[in-house]
Image: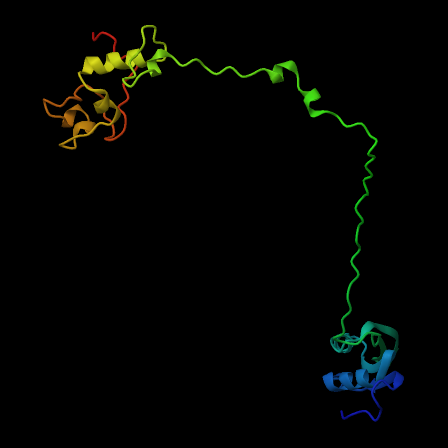
Length: 222
């Protein structure tokens, strides 16, 4: 269980014969690793009952935990219900804790050669006559002319109809576009409006938002 009488990395192989599996502990494994050269071999021979495989698994696990590689059990001899198993392992050629840079493959980008003598395509030649036509802006109707913005005679934008609805209500454009309420109930509907409310007959709306009049507002009442 003490220190082996050998210098560090001084031997190429070590043979360890054990009777009790428990004696093959971490300290012994570390000592074997210390005296072995890089790539050295260790052979561990144990004697256990024929039906018991656990000791062999314990030794293999100890070697792996100790940094050994290529751990494997070799020939087994059985005699009088006792088996002799030799487990072989190798000390790695690299030093534990060492590091080295990995070479990363660099893919070269394809080279593109440009010949100055090649004929270039004129961008303007790709345009058709239809593309070169000046876009026609929509004609502004008379409804948008002037500060009052009154509907023109042949109004087709809907302003004339909107003016008729406002005229029927007896409200101003400001009362339609930005409704306000002194009592706060004008937008809730007729059930909450007073008898003099200018919005009587209209559907509920939100104060401060334009009042929306239905399309059939100008239809005759039945």
